[in-house]
Length: 199
Image 1: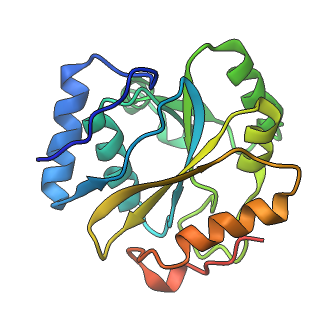
Image 2: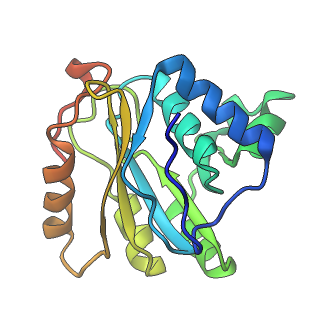
């Protein structure tokens, strides 16, 4: 299996077990990885399309197989014992969706508190059809001063494709159009659930 090498600045995990789990998931899916992970200590990865819970396994397999030390949000409903301990070990940050909270400010503070942090997010925010993407990820990256790398989940290619990197500008509409251009031709698992409209 051809796994791209991470560069020197990208936060890495030294866990052989995590890498083995990732390679096993990619093998099960007959999945591959294209492109390169950004060589930086702090950035955000946005993953799309997100039309099925199976996307989580391909994305998790990709990150684990590469050895990327990344974090991601998970609903606390999925964090019951002992699954919760496993989710946290993989990088999950439990979030209580029933309680209002300012995730943007919370996440910006996490970037400020850490010398290294890669956060992976699904901008669609759901596996159901999302007519419009949530833009919280953009506000987080903008507020934290970190770049955003695109990661496509392409079922036609059977590949996770690491794409361009943008530094959020003062113009959210221009940035979202750049994102739309990259993701519009990606083939999701469930084509009926991917609207492709982001703003």
